[in-house]
Length: 128
Length: 363
Image (cartoon, rainbow over all chains, first blue to last red; front, top):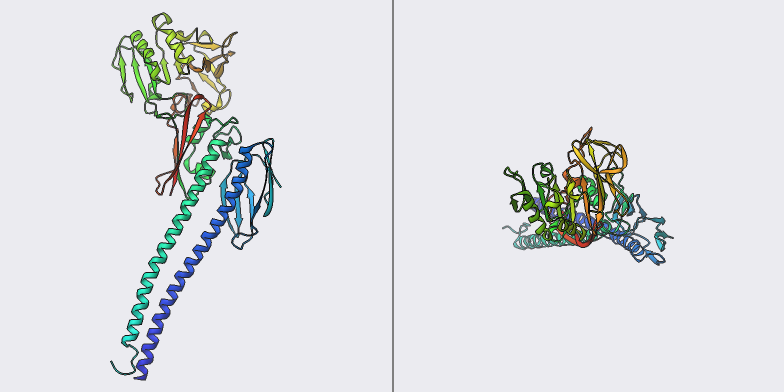
């Protein structure tokens, strides 16, 4: 009788462990997806902010000056913001990048994490 | 059930409750995940649609006068924020997957179309609605048919006309049909005339002048006695002339490529008091003469082509795309979960009417 109890106990513990493992895997996988989506969402917000700042500077025209701040990290990760050769805003973190277009075609300077000042001097957009 | 066995009713109930909870929680969790992903996707599409359509209608592109081989960034405007039809033509003729790359639309399908009023805009010179008149020579009909142009036929020949996708056909004696077309001219944006075999005295020429001077587009091919005077440009005669391509935007060929034409043809040249002559194909023997070119008359424009079947060593210079035009629309493929955005635009070739660009994106 004791042996029967032990075997059944082990079987049910095994079943529970399998269920628990599957549920944990699903939860971890979903958690990883959520984390990745949050990273992309954060990158989108940063790229959209820079794109809008550049766009406003183009539309307002000569004499425009405005300061804006980029967050210190992207969901806890280091990141950088650059303008590509075709003047798209590119946010890069880990080995990923997120790209959005912008209205600005004639841009000088580089975009920093933290404080940035954007100016339009005769159609040339300068970021410092 | 013997005493001490683990399969008790309590245990079975607890397992059942656990499984029920799992079967409720997992679908709920899955639905939440799908809803979150859909919400992210909608935000992604809306952000991208707004910025890409802004970029298209408000920027020049890089380089400023880009073409399909030099482009590094697509923008359709001129420096005056008007939409350039040559850039639209280049966009439409580009491979959609390449366009996708240039617009940073990886994984997203798109459709971009241009309209003016109730009609599709075209990549060439013509605009709908149009009237096409011919008598015997009908070299242009193959360029007009299936081009996307909304047009009526005015035919002054003796034989039954060629079948094509016209909306209405008016057939009869050539001067009567021609004058009927002029009577109806207020209904058209473009009048296309091919070798009409008519003199100015036979038609109500002032009505044709009025049509152009008030903003109409006149495309004239072949024997041009009808517009040889009174249309803001001087003309002269030439037989079997050779020309040189001077407008590489229209023809997508090398500057100074030789074009051979046949027949007893007219050329146009600028003289005192004339409008500014913009030359598409220059007479090889006299740089001031245009065998194909265009100029303003009032607020409209005259496009003259001495011989639409003129050809280079590599083939005909005129295609549907560069003279009549094909539908100004490009698409990367079928899509669902669609977002669309329509923007008002002004074409640089026509400041008198408002057009629109509609961009649709989805997955």
